[in-house]
Image (cartoon, rainbow, N blue to C red; front, side):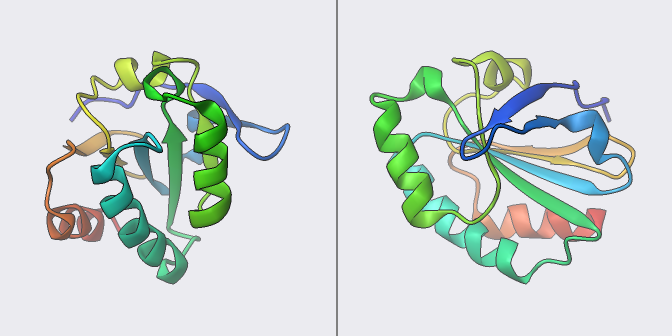
Length: 138
């Protein structure tokens, strides 16, 4: 298991900054997405339901809008406002997406409490596989 590369990104709806290294002690799930993507549109509502039922003392979920893969950044903001209650971060183009070797949206990265990547899923991964991997880190 590799250490998850640290990064800092802005939140979509606040002036605060997220830093991965500040998440130690909690498992973290990152989902990279783009508003135009049909796979993201299937995946994110399921993750949203999961987010609403999770114990946030143990695990945190963040979505990351890959601005470098967006056709229209305003559409991404509208999508997040309409469908997401999870904290949403904004990639600098494809910086963090590429840092995590993502290939397609959505991509899901699961990081354990020690900050190590324990699972990585591409755009065609069955949702139950993702849930099963999350279950192993909490």
